[in-house]
Length: 316
Picture (cartoon, rainbow, N blue to C red):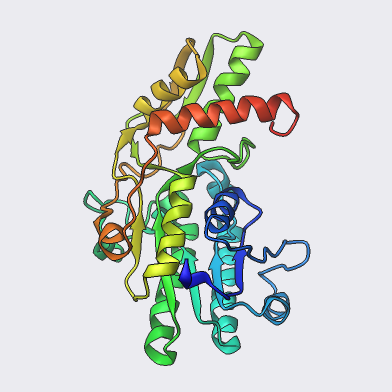
């Protein structure tokens, strides 16, 4: 708690999915951060970034804001995903250095890892190959923030840390099918099928890829702990350490939704990266982070939140 005492904190992306969970984690620590909204501060615009620093005068900035989406959105917007994510991060770090920011926490992505990195993904493997092609522009844009943070630490003594969260899920996720990731996309498909009395849903790929999932509340706690306790140049994974095939995930989501219909796999659609599982030992060693929410429990909580939000007209 003493770390946050008297500090002015900015959370970019604080109005988003992960941001909402981070605000809760910070609130438990007695922190009420400044949350810039995109309509007032377009972080791709250098003048808006400068104005943010002038207005908020932060001591600590946690950079969550990102242009993100699932495989389909990445395939349709590779240029936008690269440019917007790169420029937001690069400018926040540069202007933060100039403004005398005491610490910046930059949030990267598991998509930065090489397509065929050995499992579990260790931070040392980040540069051992090219990312999976469908999300490489996004992953590489985020990875450049690691390069920048390390270079700025070396040359300017700037305190910037870089975290690599795995696939996130949980209440308040984005269920828009144009941009949603696999868990909210599956939940929506199954709930839609139940309401329409359809007997089948279609899933992309063949179900063989594996993924690791981290509840957003766990991710938020990891970010807060890193801000408090970690100040080093090395990237740090945030994950649960558990690997599940997409086929198994469909089964678990079906149980959470009470869906009993058929699942048809469309193997004409891309699978994405073959396997993902993180080595999470560095986060536990350096700042005591360990995920707590089990996937089955988190899915049940997420489905319940979605049904309620949908009934209230607050989710698609």
